[in-house]
Length: 408
Image 1 (spheres, helix red, strand yellow):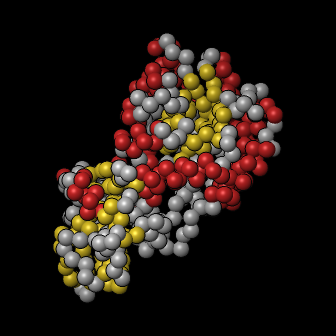
Image 2 (image 1 turned 90 degrees about the horizontal axis):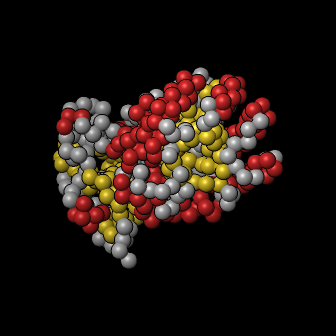
């Protein structure tokens, strides 16, 4: 089992404490379980840590796909410099926030393009065909498109959980084809902003992230030499990971900041006004989220104990191992009702679905007095939780969501 993120401990009554209240307080306030609870102070602390160590010229965008919960987006709007989006649905979710926005994704439709044009969103085109379709839609609606080119770089982010560069890919335009696309977009009188280069995600290696960012800047300098266009903005992607599993350690953020500062210092003077962006989702909100699910039944079978909960993979697919993991490993899990007690008894934490895939914790240690009615907490649930899960599967009750915000 992975380590519970630092700072989560027991309240005086022995239950898990979040924002100076035991979880029972938040469950009652929300109206029950299953419940995704998002600790606002932790999100604010992540943003503050980023600002403290990153170069001051670097802009921070929130990747809405990580967690699009409305109240969380509203809070995030006061903390970040922009939003990165993946659909016209996400455009609608943040339309009331006056921040820079961009949209990426390989399958954008005409409706997506039109929504982006009308909302003033920068469209990151990912193929020559998409560029042509966008220009056609822009002509039809009479709006000059704001465009950037997503580049499929000739390198990858080493150690990334998901590699999104250095390979044949549905994402972005291969780097050698970018100059011709630049010429086409300029010929179409597009407002060509620059480039988006995303090499991978979920990396815990500062060295790998620094190397990928430096390679990205070198690539952009080379493209500038080939095209003669100094980009107004460059999205460096993200890739900052969080530790989920046993043996993983947090990303050394200071080292990333120092490495990026050195890389920026080597940029030619022509790039002095280029807006540099890092887009982060999981790293900002992942550790702030806790999934709370109540034990409905305790049963013995084949010498093992099963704690059957009112939740399951329909809410928290990633914890079940069915969200792209090659080898299933446990997320950090604890008995939130008995955080002050020693955990010594191995149990399987399962959901209520009629499938053996609905395994939230495999032989995780629970306190000996664990009982029906106790609440199980799954940590690192703030990113790719509810909206990345099949929450209509078997028509079970929906999970609740709530911000944990203390009033003084």
